[in-house]
Image (cartoon, rainbow, N blue to C red; front, side, top):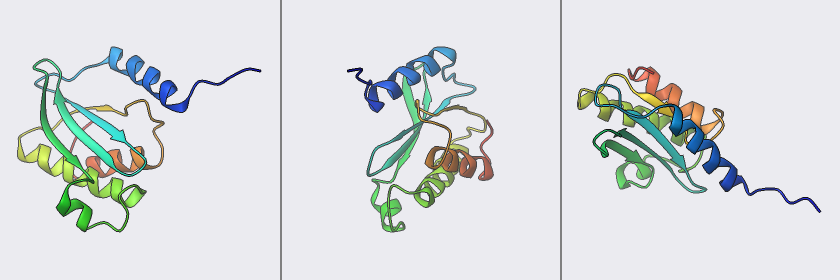
Length: 122
């Protein structure tokens, strides 16, 4: 019987391929997205320095309180707006989008579109 590789392993492999193509620089950091079954996380990372410049997630109390669910498209839109606002407050206008090996659809696409609408360029 042919066995399939787990979805997580496939995603991790895709993420490594994506990370080989680009990395965050001080001028244009990387907006990395991770989603679990319960929450979503977004970070703006300077890979040259190895530092997280800005972070937001649905685990944070104030964000979690404003959401009915923490793992749907509406939560992703909210998180996209928040991460963009925090990045713009730190003076970060342009980023490289790292979808984390996930398909650019649904929650990941909603987060990206909300970040664009809030003023982040990528």
